[in-house]
Image (cartoon, rainbow, N blue to C red; front, side, top):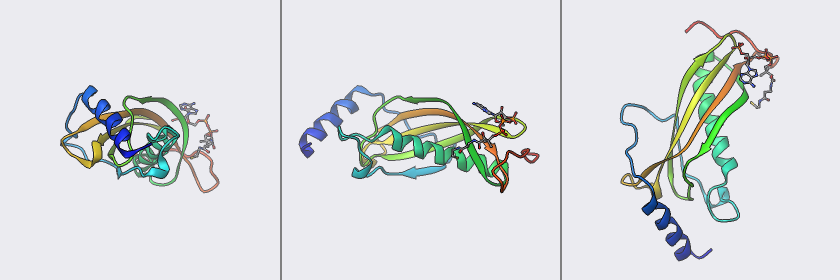
Length: 146
Ligand SMILES: CC(C)(COP(=O)(O)OP(=O)(O)OC[C@H]1O[C@@H](n2cnc3c(N)ncnc32)[C@H](O)[C@@H]1OP(=O)(O)O)[C@@H](O)C(=O)NCCC(=O)NCCS
């Protein structure tokens, strides 16, 4: 797709969406910019690439709380609210929302700064994932006390 056509498409999405600010009181677990290799056949960012970034961000929070390795056991929900474009700056936030005996559930939110411009911020994805603390034999283990 020609750069001009891509820009027109991008402008259409921007004009349709509500611009917000990045959360000021929280630190993102990950910040990442999708590259052309991460695009799907239509030129937008591939959903599977976004899912892997969400899994990575969620696992960082989970590993910290678990004090070691974790495995993703379930993706409970995943909503792509807005498209992501090559060149957006993504900020990915992760919060532990539930702690069990061996598992913990993490809510992940992804915000995009369109073309890396702070003035154009949109929430693009929301997901919740469950991780299980595992030992060196990949078996579940109890979470340490908080
Ligand atoms: C993770 C794994 C070791 C858990 O095995 P297990 O201990 O026999 O599983 P259990 O059924 O006893 O469940 C363990 C915990 O996960 C939770 N869990 C299991 N399936 C779940 C699901 N579908 N949704 C939410 N939570 C789930 C259980 O409720 C339990 O939580 P708790 O201990 O806090 O009460 C095993 O399922 C596994 O190896 N899965 C593959 C992981 C993987 O390869 N992920 C992709 C790459 S990281």
